[in-house]
Length: 187
Ligand SMILES: CC(C)(COP(=O)(O)OP(=O)(O)OC[C@H]1O[C@@H](n2cnc3c(N)ncnc32)[C@H](O)[C@@H]1OP(=O)(O)O)[C@@H](O)C(=O)NCCC(=O)NCCS
Image 1 (tube, rainbow, N blue to C red):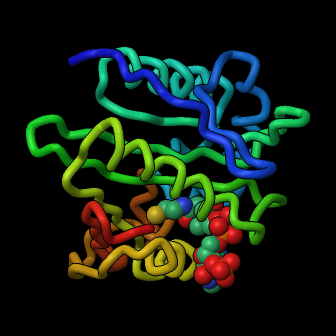
Image 2 (cartoon, rainbow, N blue to C red):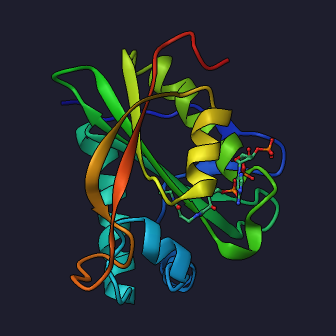
């Protein structure tokens, strides 16, 4: 697989860029949020070592062509707003979208704009034929975002997810909604 070269990804007061070690403190702080821990697969508890591993994972993905995992930042002061990522399956020419937004930055379309920018890459230069998204059925915001982005609800995986921090065997299980998007369906 070959390195992914990204065009500038900016929408108003939001820019997507790869993370680096300067972001470790801000990523670690954001990932203490109980809602991010509840609905994403970030490690729990979340440490600076986890953030460093995330930075490596993102940059490896770009170098190997296996993923586009970026931070959403404010272009003026480089403040961390969130993370938007796309895992790539080169065999099927498909991708899997994921995201979190820092608690104080929610409700102003960081996720919507960040996902749209990443979808321009997915269906543009990467020429993917399908982008999927899995959201816990209990995750109101994520399911609403998927619909708002134009994804189609394609099915439900029964009891497929934990509704709680990664690896917490005491957390309740919940259904997973499968959402899918084809080229031309989202603009
Ligand atoms: C899901 C999440 C990323 C949304 O981020 P956000 O930046 O606040 O979302 P946006 O402002 O871009 O919202 C886009 C659309 O999603 C919907 N939406 C977002 N939050 C919502 C909420 N709490 N309730 C209902 N709808 C919501 C709205 O339709 C909104 O469109 P609108 O502004 O035109 O009304 C954020 O809540 C989050 O980080 N949650 C924890 C992590 C997580 O759940 N990740 C996803 C795992 S599948």
